[in-house]
Length: 234
Length: 234
Image 1 (cartoon, one colour):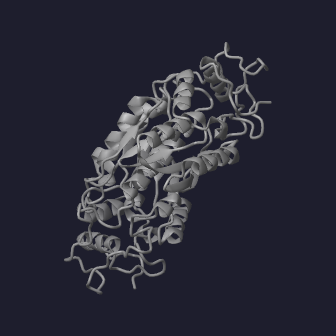
Image 2 (image 1 turned 180 degrees about the vertical axis):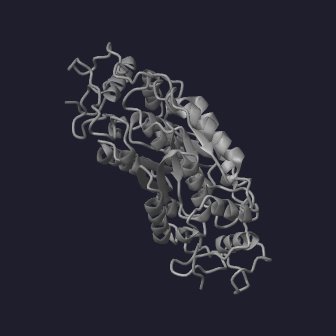
Image 3 (image 1 turned 60 degrees about the vertical axis):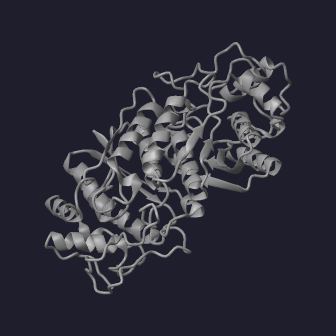
């Protein structure tokens, strides 16, 4: 069976895609870029993962209008990406969700971003005859993002059933959605996922900062799994 | 209240936007372009409608990856846009749905296109604090497009509720969804919508062809309303 894998270049989508490959799916890899600060670095990580897994098709979709819309620290330079007050790599005792809006949603939330990702993957899946979309969303460590919850993907699955051809059947597969970061690292190791090719940092593109929400959670995951993260930190 | 109006440049979205304006909404107009054959002409129609209605914000979102994905006569040059076998303007006795896929969906269906439109509008609405999205979909004359049905928009509304911030409330308003083309023309006339600024043709950008599905339906609408269509035909 064919599957469309959404691959951001981060560790969660890497493990999600590795799951599809391990399940024997014939995969198309899709990367969605949206004018985020580290877009070029994430694209490089995507390309490296494609070279590693050799999907039968790769597609890069530019939804740069999300940067024009703004409203997120990842796309709007006037909103700071929150950093841990600890400068040491691996400071995990401070919640990365400290800098949230009054609603409890982190300022790094990109409004309705995952709907754009699912829409791109669905259009491709319908044309390619793929029956599954793999996305590396997780509602455990990142539960502050509303569009990372399984109930959101259930609603999108229903919209897909109603909004595509009658004979189109597409499931949204979320292999890591209920895994903590440590479990994701362990699952990736089991699947021999090339973590050294992935990139998670929200702010830097050369050496990971080790202090943004994303780095903090990544380091927490490797620490929980008792592994050294193979990527370089500042 | 603020509203985001999806404005393609065609007559249905024109009447939809006119409804929002008539309801006293403070409007942002959004145009989504996707590499379709007549993209530049539709963009020109959008700009003209903005100059006419003066929305407080205008946004053009390029989802050109839909052309890379293909699978539609509107974005893939290897799939012909079906034309009526009658060359006379206003030939309405032949169904514009004659050239459909085995599933009954016209070859001009762009896979899951309206989900991309709703995603763009939702991201903007969430940032702008808009409570409504207006879209000119109609399930009467175009019922062959699955993503034009109200049940699809109901599913997307649910996905929006689950995939945005807890305090975000966005309704999808579909003012013309149950109107035939004749009713849409009559409603537009009632609202003094500038039909002369709109463009519907799928194939031409100078003089409308009068023969594609879209022209055929448009002409049927004006004929039903007993009005002459103000745009020029070949």
